[in-house]
Image 1: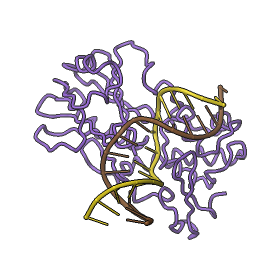
Image 2: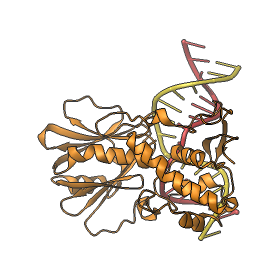
Image 3: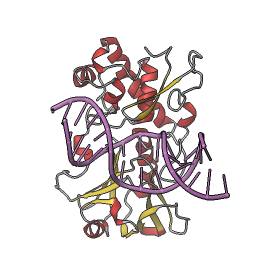
Image 4: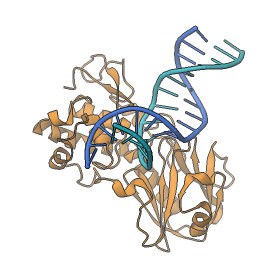
Length: 274
DNA sequence: AGATGCACCTGTATGC
DNA sequence: TGCATACAGGTGCATC
């Protein structure tokens, strides 16, 4: 599932392929993945536009077009965005094809169709996607202990749900929430109100460290994730908590536990995480 | 306002 | 073998 490190890796891999390139036309096999505006206007809005630059905000990928409009893409669970030659074989469940100059194509595929795209005209306020509700970027100073504590310490939820709240911090998903809590030595089911100052500090340090390491490893390809050239990442080989329930802890050797928190599979070490 | 549960989807794994 | 069921989890929404 693409989280911040995967979307950042996707952005970096697409940058050299898309920057300065013109979109000739849009082929829509499943227009329903377009969330705003309607498919017709979306297709007209991107046709003929040159892609000036790429960006990322939380788990959203942004393409800045030359007329000042912004294209937002969210991959949710199984979305993929791959740029390749027109002749290259399509991934299954390809819903959109952005035909580009020079015989290249940018394809959006998504098995479960949770992902979506939004086109915001120049100056148009984003009142459509969830991007407007995002909290600060954890890799741009948004993860200081004071802010985390202020935002969460009076909430009644447990800490894993707290750091998954995109309005508190942008970009963490299930994988890196488990990894960050393991690194910080904090049980995921602890109430937010129970964390000490030292624990808020440990967590605010662990989150950027975990995310940076995952970006260095070019993302986690547990099942579906591929970068913009269709390549898998390497970070799945470095996970210490996610999906390791029943296995031995890589730090202390105890048997890792698996539970459900907020409807999500959650793994932790009952010995290392207090 | 904040917390909770469900809907959205389909591929894969499991049980009978 | 075939079928039913559970599970994977990010987000938006309804409900309390």
